[in-house]
Image (tube, rainbow, N blue to C red):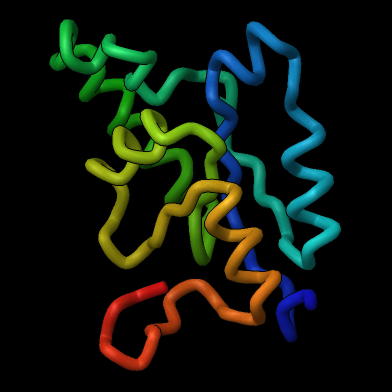
Length: 128
């Protein structure tokens, strides 16, 4: 079931998915069909700095990219950030304001499917 009101989610395109495979619209379509208002950040095409193992071998440059990506995402004031890549998720999470959750696309879809809102807890205090 869709959420009672649209969630305002910033979507981050993983570089390999968007640039190498040309997949940009499919994740947005499924999120929108699930009741999510998809927000587009400035400089969407800029890498977050993860790039596989790039953030391990070039940490200084990766940090600059990660901070820039997080700032662009935060500037559009989303309730949460969504991405389909775990490397991007962990990289962006390091620089994103702690009050903004970041979820993998599959995590958000599961939560919406079972009727949970991001940020709710499971009753034991753990965020879902």
